[in-house]
Image 1 (tube, rainbow, N blue to C red):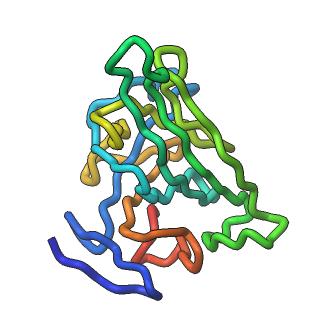
Image 2: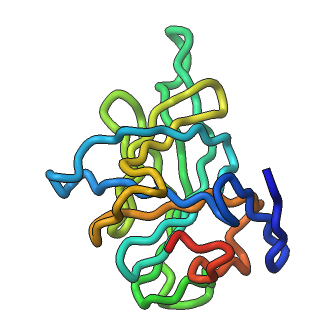
Image 3: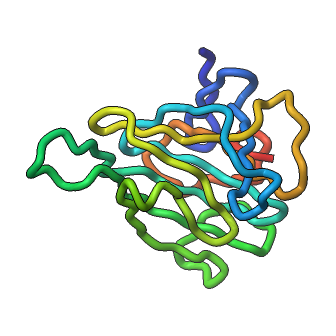
Length: 168
């Protein structure tokens, strides 16, 4: 793997500077189903793009239910997105919508915010699977969601529209 530094952000490269993947939005019936998975640890930061909407989410408290008294399997995630075509995460901007959500298996299995909907399942303690529909060489249709897995501790200062970081 080759690492590239961009504005205090190290982008992990598996294919080019960023790993680009596309997932189908579950509400678009013809795009249902996920053919591929990618394991992500607690603290993983993932950039997303759908049409001209940019965002990101961080997975945390991913957990399995191993014993009867354990909490239900699931995860929590912090998310942000903006619909103005700008890819910069700025928590002080009124254009940036943010939140924290939780999903619990078996009922919940979707990381969902704004126009984004990605399937998730538990892997092992502190790890989960993110499901996606297409590999980078596959045709990307307009309703597809693009992903970029980044190696960073936060979204501060990240410009998702910058080609070095972008899920475009």
